Image (cartoon, protein in one colour):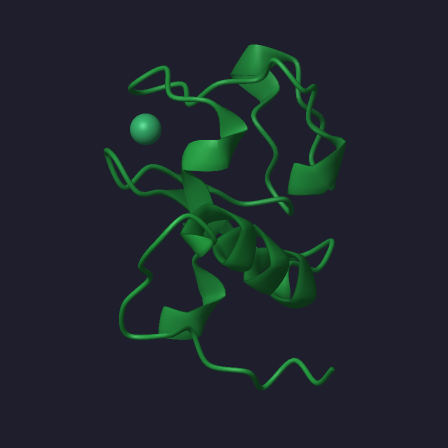
Length: 86
Ligand SMILES: [Zn+2]
């Protein structure tokens, strides 16, 4: 598996969520910025969220399982890698 695998144009059927999650795992690195697909809030691991008790340098993966988007309250599952647009 390389990390050059593109996101598919469309995801359909029962396996879509699973396929998306697998794709994300191949693309998320400790320094990967993650973007909320609901409100477009971006979590930058280099900056963390000091106001929320998240130290700078905390990878998205290490955020608590019950962590939610500070802006819209959606769970971690609502986030997608944002670095593709850099
Ligand atoms: Zn959000």
